[in-house]
Image 1 (tube, rainbow, N blue to C red):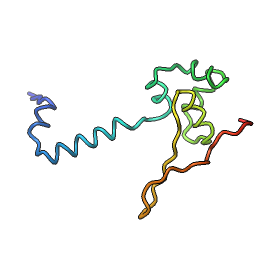
Image 2: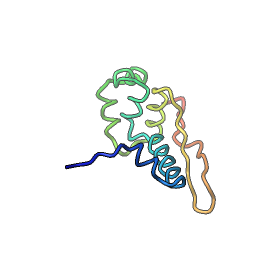
Image 3: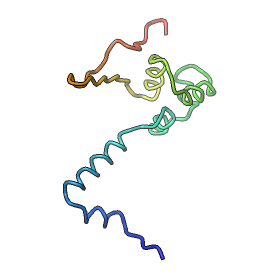
Image 4: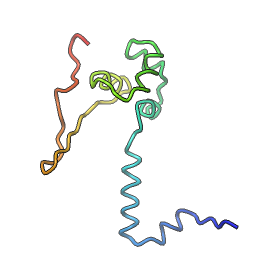
Length: 110
């Protein structure tokens, strides 16, 4: 026989510091988005709607969402079509985190 214990009961029995660590990691995981398709779904857009905003056909959006290697300019256009703003953050050992600007910027020719 399998005994099921509700998650809330398990969390309530944890020491405060361990519970805080679990809560912090859960927040980090919720803040992560796994790919462009999930980003698009998060803002409740269809591939067709993103395609229209980018002036391309829907199959192009499908291809972009499946790629694992994109130009930053393509990623920026996709994020902006979803109503967002792309920021590139770089973490350097001993130096901290920095917002990298001027990379993948759209020019008037794009």
